[in-house]
Image (cartoon, rainbow, N blue to C red; front, side, top):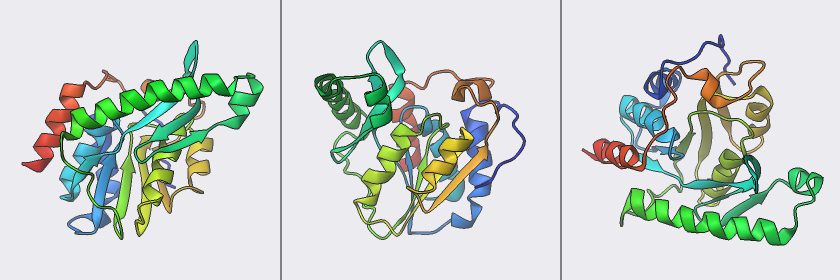
Length: 218
């Protein structure tokens, strides 16, 4: 895991360019696929895939937020029917299983909507035997990235690399048990939140995701 000085990135594009430089050894390989976690991970992943000249796709993951405190993850779901539960959060907050299931069903509907919107009728790029680079704009709890890595692992890739511009030190370390390699360019202490490490952290829209995916295909 690489860590450099903790200075904010200008925006997601700059973060993607710096991440691509760290991944330059993967350039022009026909066994490499970049999977970006929408929405914020897509502008980062687009710059990585464009620089490496490898395919880009989205891998949809949804956080299961605690009702009333949605930024706190009690789990996550991912394409392929994967669901991971953070039992420590669920148990400490005494969240009933029925509530977890209700949130899961709501997020499943949103996951399906986003897959239709972003991919239209295109199937996910085959991942068997590939080196898969999972990209997001940052890692806080890592719940969504863990769900993504678990779901991707079920598709038989040769290698999974989690690559993010910034993340909490403990989260980046924990993900090393889920992925074959974790690249986290900056692990500031204290971390607080992903958005603090970007000067421009404008939310990524669905339209931007679709535009970047279409641009990668051209």
